[in-house]
Length: 497
Image (cartoon, rainbow, N blue to C red):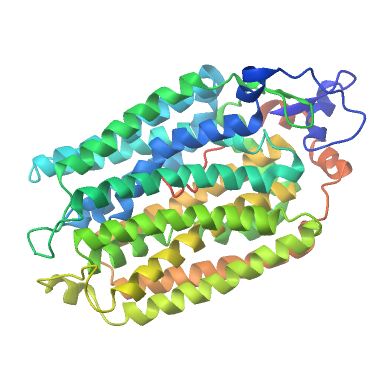
């Protein structure tokens, strides 16, 4: 997506994304219902509801630990397959989106989430035979997720002006994670009357059926969204749709981005850690220690706190009016750094009390009425706040580095590929039985290290305003402009599958 003006030539189009000067010619706005429907924020909300129904339900299922099952190994293997194919097919998703358009690409992406949830229903009905189907469904979902997040990412950073990026990301993230809240509420309602017995340790068929119905609704929403070619941004500028590159061009674009803006390398550890901590939170804490009723409640408050976290850091810190952008960047970094040590020190106080071996010997797991549960559920709340703040800040930092959509496409491509690689590795480690403490400590080190590496980038690269001459320098290669465009194999869901 790029902003166009009548007097611009093709090479200049992408240099004004985020510009809000008087020279721009405001396009005629629609009135009444159509004006509301074609408002960029409304379309971002619709996009949020697509992810609400599909990745949101995936998150709610993952948050139960082991996909709501007794044996978390099948879910861990499925997630390994998912993130492996996600990382690989991200390179090809742009070409699919180029051919089909974002709405069709979104719809194809949603189908994979319905299949994945259906596979857990099958596994619940036939637990001895459906395991390979769950893993295969995870691999297919990885392909579909690459398509969905490519289309999603090509919109979420293109519709807002420079001053609105934090708000738009925060609103999207809040609606997206509302899916996790609703999904967790469905599970909580289905399982709230369950007693803390060894035989009641996984969700019932009704929970999976409820999730499946919601994801099928999500499959239909992309067809109701507006054509991006007809969109007008809030500063009156028209959004133009680029053609997505071939996978060969995209690989070339990755190399060129590294050559022209190597500071992005300093964000790679932050990208790698961005989904890594889910494994410990969901499988090695929530699934390991709690019965299904407590797991459902933990899951509910986790995704509810995500909404608070994304909106709080996006609107109150990263887009705070009256503060310079560099000051906001350092403030966001400081909040994340504090949260890393608050959340992980708290988690360590619990993790040191149990192991895989001790959990295997439990005949009764913690219930919501048990002594000590209150402190444990508050940790889940802080984990949710931390995750939302981490993902929102990562996107905001990339947006602060550039307003050029082709450059942002490459940056977010790095983000999701590296994120998926980290997630695939840790889910596999969990599946083969690596000690809980090892997974926990590696997560703590990666999050702390990711922020330490990001600090020099913020100091040297984030400025109070993205200068046009910097975008022009990056756009010196005309062949790059022709080949690399908005190709976002994205994410926070979010996690988020």
